[in-house]
Length: 230
Image (cartoon, rainbow, N blue to C red; front, side, top):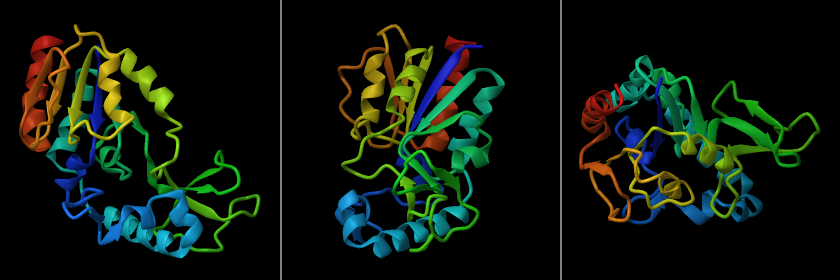
C-alpha cells in the first residue's frame, strides 16, 4: 500500500475541545508558557508544573476524537498511514490510528528526571511530588518542553522521507522543528495542508491547501488521495 504521512497539530485537537497551547493573549490556560512548559519552570516550581499537566491530563481524558481524527484513522483501510503528531493527547489512538509518533511527548506518560530512558505509562491522571522512578528519582511529565531537544525528530525525518503523500492538518507550519519536515520531500510528492488560517507556504511545490477545519478538510483530502494514489 502507498505510504501516507500525516503531520497533525493543535488545531485538530481544538475541534474536540482541547485548547491550543497558546491563545491570542500569549497564555496557555491562563499561564505563561515560561512558567509551565520549560525546564526552568520545572526547576523553579515543580508543583505548579505538575498541577498544570494534571489538569490538562484530566481534561484530555474526558474528550473524544472528532471527525478529523476518525478520517485519518479510516485512511488505514486503503493506505499505509503514519501519523506524526505535535499533540500530546491520545485522540489519534482513541480514533483508531495504529501508528502514531508523538514527537512532543505524551500527557499519559511520565519519565525519570535522572534517566530519560525510564518512561512509564500513567494509570491515572495525577502525578505528585514524591512519585519516583525505579531508581528513586522524581518523575516528570514525558513532554518535550520549550528549550529542550526533540528526541524523536530523527525518527520523524525517517518516516517522512518515505512518504508518497504528505498531509498537514491542524497546524500552520510555524512550530519548528516539526514544520521543517515538509521540506524534506521531493517536489513530486503530493502535499496537502488543512488549516482554517493558511500560512504563507509559497516555497512548497505541489501543495494543495484547504482553508477549512480538520473535519471538513480531511474529507476532501481523503478524496484527493484516493484519486492520486488509489
